[in-house]
Length: 460
Image (tube, rainbow, N blue to C red; front, side, top):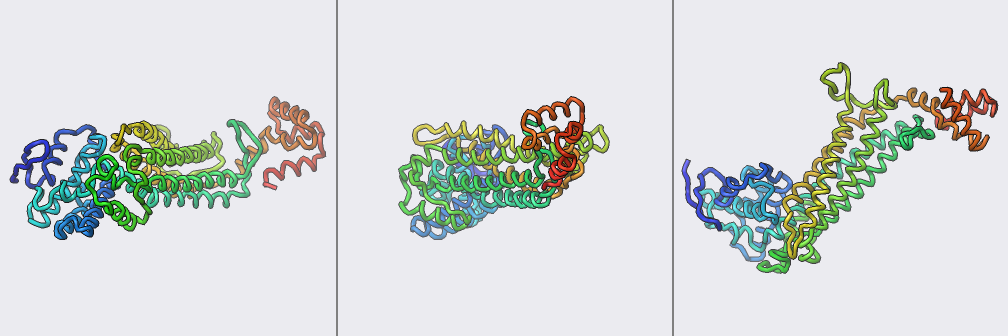
């Protein structure tokens, strides 16, 4: 394996011929291994898309020679497709503007473009990382743009479809369980009966609203910072550059991005990502409620509530044979906890805007993209591996209704609140049902009591 000497802004470095596509990437990979965490496919893919689109537009504007522009375009397209992911080795925890990763991309793309043109990997001739690949751009507007493009695309392409799948499954169960009556619960205590379908209808509505919130989160990310360059005033960029690049990105992603109305806001603040993260947090909180209710209703199966049964996915105990745990609901709750933690981090990072730049961009990117990805995966798995297979246990549900002292509520219109309360207390102290105490007290004819209480269990 041969080596060569390259120089970057820091100085000279010896680069193996078959290593990364440039000196700065090589140096940073060796000197700054903070966490071992690198940016994932959605971020690098969006970064490649921005660079590819920029090369196309710079060629159209006559700012790059056609041959150089074409090589940059093709190399950046390889980045967008994931063919050069192994060369994006920089740690997420780096300079707060993400300059290291932007320069990583410039250098990789230039190095690959040079290889295409000359057969020699890396270097700065004939394609230069800054003068050509980064033409009309700055890390300070590119990285915020990439965060928005990656996150909004993930919301539209992965999260919303996963939530729609979950909505369908929950709605199906709401219809299927419409006639199954069960005891309601408030404060974790017996309340008046509801139908299992009504409960699942409530869950479906939560997810439906979560889809609406996700769309609003994507819309919050629709304005992008590209065109502001270093500080927001667009220095060293063509006045048509940003608009054309953003239009091209919109066509390629199918999402309507637009140039920031005010570039100083777009680069100095990250309110848009804080807003989007808040939407993800709300979806996470909804999923916690749904998952908790399902695992509680399925608890037991014999000594818990046991009103529903959920699919058994794997053995749940290393010591208790036959025990099966609610794997999917617990997975969802843990994912949601991570999203809530990510939102707290993003909220803190949103406060990292000082003067003309927010310098917490890599951490915002890491956490927002992770939140969207894991929410999408969790919602899809929950829909197919849990909700789709839920079955009701109608006899168990009816038995709880019969035993509940909350049934005294149905006597209030006939005997008044105080008398119904007395019957409820006696039932509680004696262990008898409300029906049994009411019959003993002869407060209403037996046929009328049967009509009242039997109608409750049948949903009539």
